[in-house]
Figure 1 (tube, rainbow, N blue to C red):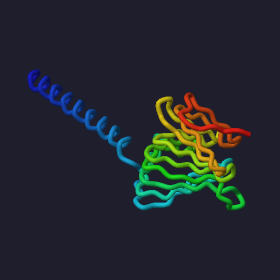
Figure 2: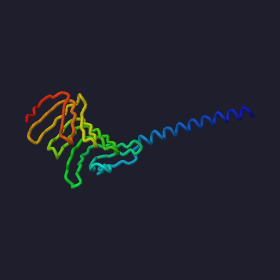
Figure 3: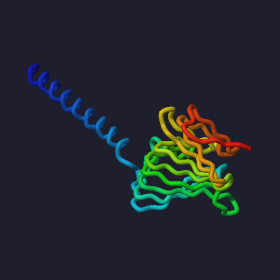
Figure 4: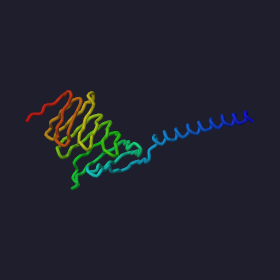
Length: 178
């Protein structure tokens, strides 16, 4: 009898460990799979204090647990309370936080600041929504085009869209004179 009980306990412990392993895998897959997948979609990111950002994208994957949106082949528009476009742009892909609305934009990034009449272009930019800041890595080339035909290119862009103030770690081309 003792042998049967021992064998039964061993089998039970194996089944329990297999069961726990499957549960861990299920939890892992829960984080890997999006809560919502949208194809050829329009989506609005909004919080209570800031103007909403309307996104049109080839694909949007939303992950509730991490407040993350993965977006591909998209354009975006931000309008003020009067409906005037203040900011627009495009990128090949992005990873955005659905709570803070901060985003990392990747691939042929263009941001047009309509209020300050300028365009920012880069292969990768980070956008901090609440602070209205944009920046690129120190090894990332970025270009700013002003409506007055002035152009500045450099590495390590650090920009404040609210004040239209920009700096570079290293300027490659461009001069602005008053």
